[in-house]
Length: 204
Length: 128
Image 1: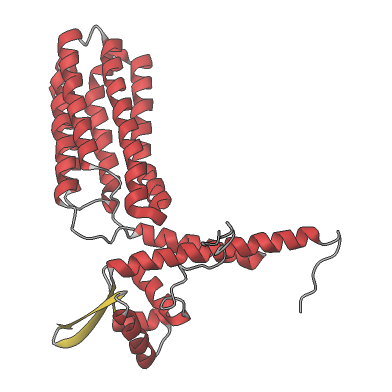
Image 2 (image 1 turned 180 degrees about the vertical axis):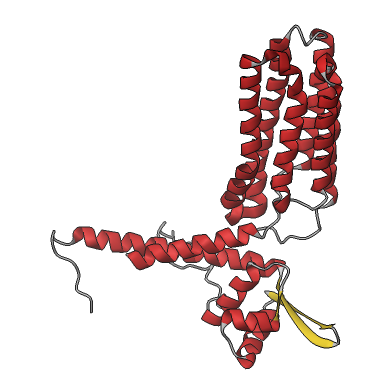
């Protein structure tokens, strides 16, 4: 019986090695472009309903948290279906690796938001910049399994995050600090995925 | 009249156990190449699979005819260099093979578990 379990373990480790050297195609360009559009829509909603975000921090957080949750859900659902179709027998392994790479930055962003809002509300203006920096770190850590030009998207988010912090104060909470960063950034990610898709059927 | 096939028919057919891949040396070649998608030189592959030049050439020939690998001949610093790479088809068929092999082992382990459950307590099958 032990030999059989060992054989299953060997097959699983071979599959992991193959997955480690396979480019991840689970992120769909159209879905990621849609998340960019959500960011622009959220910025419009903020501009209309929460013009003074400094004094209505909870409303600001509600708009952007809802946008983030919606984007995560549709990206996650599409990642699972697309990965099962493209990577078939490697899909579970590939999804696990993709989540492992991106989840720490999402988790850090969530915890940072809770801590800043509860304990240092005066520093809440830093949130958009910090979210973008953490998002860039998530992209950098996922780059190993994504097309090489994806580094450009990581650099974009890092740059916009630093720019938000450099702006300082209430200006950092302006709707377009998030709307432009994520609208353009997700558009860039979608374009990179779309144009770097090679015409091969080697993904299994 | 068409006879109705029972649901268990073909249960253990294991069609995915590709005859070309189901050979120790070729399986080891494909495993090496599947984990190195950019390819391996002939010499690296020879060392990884512990094969002689002749054996490796023979098995690569079979795999190339089956379109599972491609062999690229070039030069590196005026020396001839042969690089072997797994093809898209080869990668797909190799992963299908792994899935079938996994199914075979699952089926076997279920059978072994059933057999050991049916044995009287305290008795273990003798090792022949």
